[in-house]
Every structure is written in structure tokens, then in C-alpha cells.
Length: 80
Image (cartoon, rainbow, N blue to C red; front, side):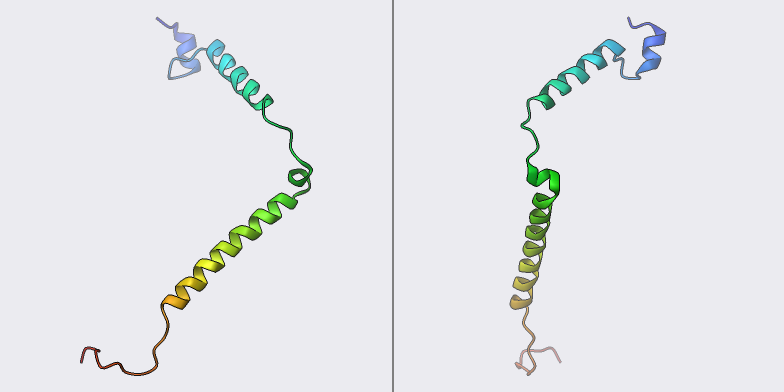
């Protein structure tokens, strides 16, 4: 049974010790990640990523425009 004061700390029953252990585990996992590269630090990687996203969006738009071409003349199959 969890004491009332600890239950008020967290409605799901987690104690402060459990939360501290979880935070320590996350900190250990983050410490294992490689350090940030200079491209990440100066923003050039973000710029390249943003450019790729825009190029993909424009490429999709151009494909849609090519598929849905306009016809200026009557084909003869229109509803009356």
C-alpha cells in the first residue's frame, strides 16, 4: 500500500524514487548518443533538410499538375 502523501505526488502511484530512477536511465541513454556535429550546431544540416522537404513537396505538386492536364476542346463524352 502506498502512503497518502506519496499517492498525492503522482496519481499513477509512482514514487519520487521511481521517477528519479527513470530520469537517471534516460540521462544515461542520452549520454550514449554521439556528440552534435558542426553541421547541426551551425544550422547548415537543418537548412539542407528544409530544402529537401521543399523539393519533395514541389515535386509532388508538379506530378499532380502533369497528371491533371487541362483540355480546351470538347471530347464528346460530356454530360448534356
